[in-house]
Image 1: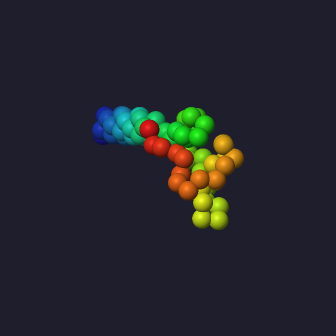
Image 2: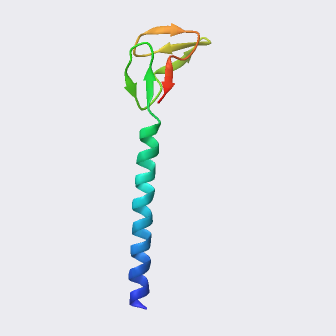
Image 3: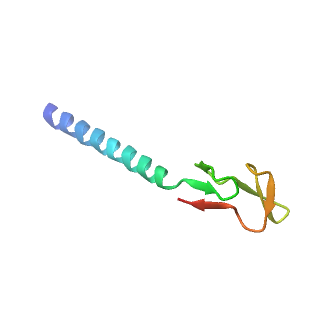
Length: 70
């Protein structure tokens, strides 16, 4: 029975490594680019203020969000 436990732990460890790699690859694909500043970031730099999009990087208000997915 000891061999089965060892094999199970190896399979779980391998699955965990694959999940971490997939998460990293997915996260890398979800970068945002601010059209106003040209900066690339992990999150959108816009927030809604009074029905408009406010870019924290450019410190300006826009009708549409200035971030694009990469």
